[in-house]
Length: 199
Image 1: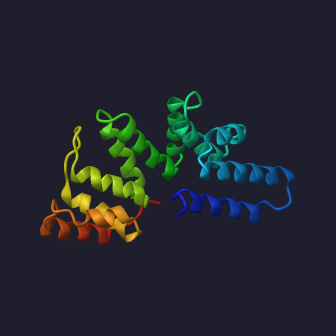
Image 2: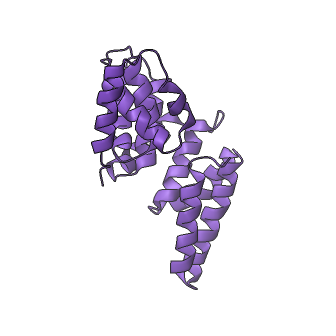
């Protein structure tokens, strides 16, 4: 099963190939991105950083995202949480949904519990834009939260239902939680029906 990031990136790269034409500079960019993506898929973060960091400095957002992700996931001494997070913040400010989701993950799993409100903020941003992974995480957070996050079973059911409808298996299982009353389910389902993604 491909990483959830891979399908959109492959699509992006293929689209780029069709529109770049025969330009040598563009062909080099595509080749570099492809090499970096293949390394990313294999978990070879040092290769990703080495390959894509120069391209990232030119402003290529795909290279920036993959480099930041690798900085966060690489083993020391290449791991650089501060640099990776800083890049994700810049990308999120530009509307990059994957960066928003990843900032939610960082604040949930790396900086928690004091940063859970920040995690909720970024997960909500990504969830509102239709990211099923963020919707799942937000639903779980709202169902059984701590660290200053208010439990809201109705909103939790809404987000989990939306993620499940997009094929998120964990969300589908979470919908069966005994923490949901019939009222929670009815109200959450109504909210999910009326929901439209932010563009």
